[in-house]
Length: 325
Length: 282
Image (tube, rainbow over all chains, first blue to last red; front, side, top):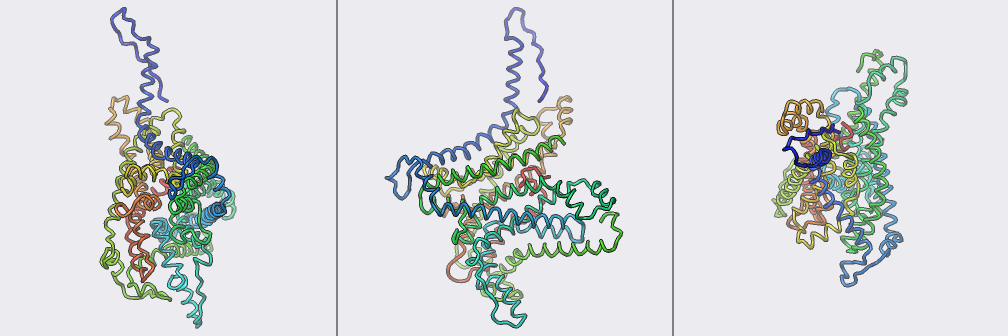
């Protein structure tokens, strides 16, 4: 906070009873406060209007009986929509799918990302090129990536995966290579693999930044004292990386929970791959059940508040570290 | 490696690990390489089993994508995407830079609460607000309008932008600001001489992140636009047909639409992390 400077009372004609100096000081202080706050206001007001008001509307609609296909039958529904949401097996399975999808994608890409970050943390020839190759998947537009996996890689008759199987089997003189239909045999895994491919580079970049912010001399000293590479990793690197691992996991969760593109493109939510965003999209866009879609939205928001609280706490601990540095 | 690597054994494992890194890099890049290669094949060569890697190259896919085969022209969606991304990015900067300045340099009281409010809006699933936005747009006659997307993309990227800009502006040395104010420098001088040099790379990085997210967005664009204001990702999902071969065309389209992001991302790899981690990782 800036130090408060009490303005010397500017001399006026004797006898005029101006406002007491203290009151004036308070007023200038308040004006200064507002001047400091003013640049914030446009962004705040904009965000409240565009992101918070719709949510209030969602809450209101969630208590309404409202299907666009039956516009006359509209009224107060109390908790009917919520009852429908919690008893709907499709909704329950999409909650399970969302959790499974998110946890698998985040954990696997976090582990792969950690491995890759450790590999890239050492110098070797062409390190810059390898790093660039590794982050490319993250830069492919998500829909393009989903289409690529679905049609060019997974496709049972001409996808690259089965093509390579044919190759290998021919190499050994066999004419009947296995040709699995990846997207029907394991639909959820198909979605997960494409997402892991896209998110591993993200995890790697955060963890690499963490590795490179380590104090080099402590590691050097430990090596001099004869600590093995594993000991260095276990007792020095990993504790240092903890914050970065948490951050990467939470940010990954925030983004992957909201995933729509891959589910929509690769499986169209079929075969048990419908996650929450896709289910809401369907209830609203295809079933036109506005009341129930809103109730689903409210439930999703309440669930993500739990994740968000943890995420915010982690970010704030990193932030505090930065401020006190 | 460091000075403490005398043993040849360590050097050997070192180069072996370098090789592993290379193999991983190639493995991750392979699908992208396959996408680009397929985009330069003819439709019949693109859909073979086993794959025809060495088939002759052809621009057929690109010609088809750009409307050569009598299909729909991709230019309107590409221009829509460009408009939505660029305009919303500009709006984001106009709103985020002053806000971040207020939070970083002259912290207002309870500044961290404000900061976390911004962040919390980003953590809530956008899909939950989709319906009210749709209904309001419907009543206001704004469905299938690119300006609606501009507004939504601005709100989508604003929280990240504030966080990111704040982390850049926090690096402006406070002593220099104080010195400038003692020397009687005005606001303009302070901003152009002291703040701008530190802030410019940050502004560039923020703009890049905001552009990429807007360019990639599918859900809102799909629900809120139609024939007029459809964006490139929506157009891309419409390219898949149930009849005939389309693989080369789809790969060409995916390559063209990803290209701006890939180029921008290569140019600013580190800034990308800083943006996506909300400035927490430098």
